[in-house]
Length: 161
Image (cartoon, rainbow, N blue to C red; front, side):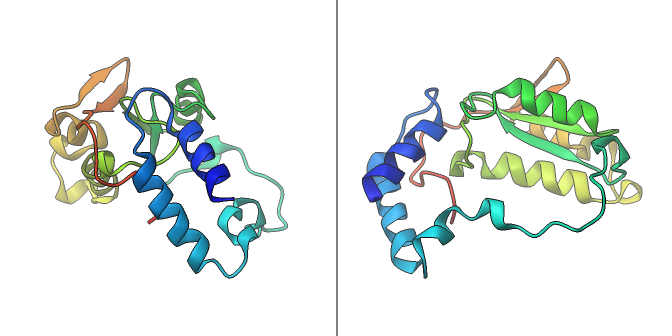
């Protein structure tokens, strides 16, 4: 099972960044060891939903930043772009070279985007938006997408922590 999960992690990581197989194997071994049931490792689909009718993304009014890897093999970048376009006022932070998971190399850019997105407008300046936060991190903005810088390799493979 561990080899299967390492292979799955490699697939989700995409092909733009180095894949640290040793670090991933260690993380997956720890996940498997602490899981009460193997099924709990992949439980995204058991989240309870309310009984109301599904609402359109256009009905969201909360400040939203969509964070998406530019090399995501499961949901390519156009999916993130469509999501951001469907939510009024949403911003898209593209993590350059990132796959489907969250890599330690992106933590700072993600934190800046979240803080910039959740700080009340009355206490922040225009430079504190998610896009400006990515710019401060040496990222660039292209076609409305704030691209976080790629910081190179990491001692953590990303994924759950």
